[in-house]
Length: 181
Image 1: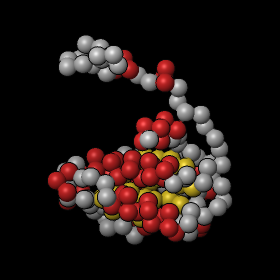
Image 2: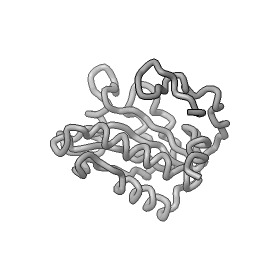
Image 3: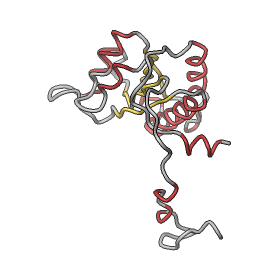
Image 4: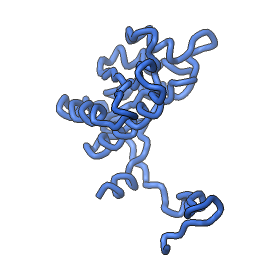
């Protein structure tokens, strides 16, 4: 059941050194390419990174929060050509969620690393660092990177009582929604 997949999925930042098999990588790519996009413009582009030396360089993209990618066997860089759609951020976000859920369905762990509006260092944005590193067109924007691999850590599902049901309204803000209605 899909809801069970959502219940179990957690962000994984520690991976086994086992490579992701090509057939699973192919399934991840197909899933992203099947992602819905506004008006079917498909502004996204993806860079699949599995070269260990390049993974270490990709992991240095941000000042904080991306170093764990150096140990991931696979990173997918999610970027877009903004000239194709004014809602490229949303389209890339949808593709990233599809990627996470497909990874979980294949027994893989994953974790999102935000790039858009983040810094590499005081002089360079994380986006510009990755554009240079990966040879992307200068007009492209990198939204995120997703580290993927076989989990080397276990995390319990988020407890149901921690879900923010109080943020769900019925018909009008301020009118609480109830499962019983």
